[in-house]
Image (cartoon, rainbow, N blue to C red; front, top):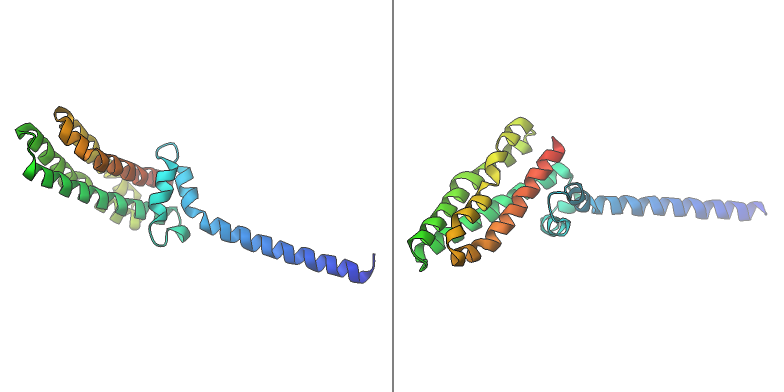
Length: 183
């Protein structure tokens, strides 16, 4: 082999190595959402996690701590929406007093327990005050579970709140699982 052929082969090999490390580095940065969701796959549906986290601007380049903050924001927003839905249904519910009372209980659980707890947990997690953030975990997911239980006597009201409760449960579980992975 001539020196020129050897030099050309070395140059091509070096260029290929540079490009492959560039593309694998870009792929690694793009997979931060997938990595975070995969890390908590025992607790959440990975596709749901990736879809919801992936919809947040900046998620693709965020680390797991950033994903925790995003998941807490998503869960708090979902809880606030569920609280508003329950309160609205309670005001106009035609299923009777028991259903109205159960829907009001849902609104209270979301508005007075889980949503404020998620917001506080997020603030503590942002400051990396892990002990304080973890202390709020018993409250963060109570609304979805408690609302579902309160509505057990009214199939119609339970069906109307099912999607909101389920989404909240999934999002609060994401935030909880990500917090547990970081601490």
